[in-house]
Length: 365
Image (cartoon, rainbow, N blue to C red):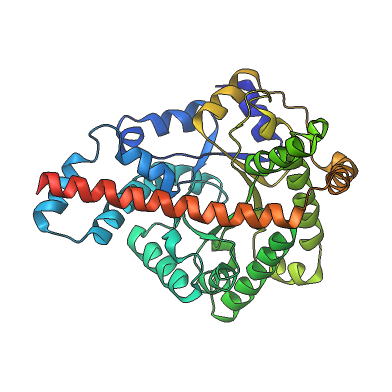
């Protein structure tokens, strides 16, 4: 077992794997990561599933059966993806039981084409919860304006939610408010709040990618490579502020758990940067870091875990964001572009997934 990953876990950071595939499940690879690399959760998204379906033969038998049955494309996609999620949830169930529901979680995302439709997103979330039928599942809902009321409605039904595609501090504040409202409604509906879990997935590397591009055009590359971490650190400051209110205290007294900040998009895109920077520099209690396997391996090999690397640096983060503004970087425009591109990328991956399964169904019919 990696001592570095053990140290990271000891700092209160839950390590989740940002990947899933039938091959990983079939070979026992996920069990080995749980045993040897402190992995206590799994996240998925349309891009991950699209990649998994396009490689190897692990899905052939199920797709062949679906083709023989003549199921339609949408049903086939849900049959394939929820099968993997159920399997992963069963593998992680001992972790879920050992941590009393804190970890051992597996996330599956609503159809990204519904990101701007509140009613359909909420209906899809309920359907996925029913299809997977595992208590350690989380339904991923994007933090679009239409997604916010869907998050509240889903939580109100006692369904655990992973809020995804968060880029801006303002939107993150709205996400926390939606979480509070959802739990308040869940309490009114008679649900046990201690059984409802939620994380807020704050994207990191994509912020640097977009801002670095703008800094390069402005001739201010001296400021590059720091915005993603600064933005995430200020998100944690907001988390501390919001979860220090009387509104939260009332929910906590009723048995609720905090909605933990989750650092997503932690694979480093720029080869000039340290490949562990979005882990080493975002360590604080009650957080989750979901990593692609190359990042997990890099941290296990040469990560530098030096204690809390968020709370002592709030002022540095604020100063850096102020410097970006002075350099002409429009933060509001950056996060708007990132949200739009995020939804578009997941829609494209979902379309690719549909096309892949459509081809498989045709070939095996």
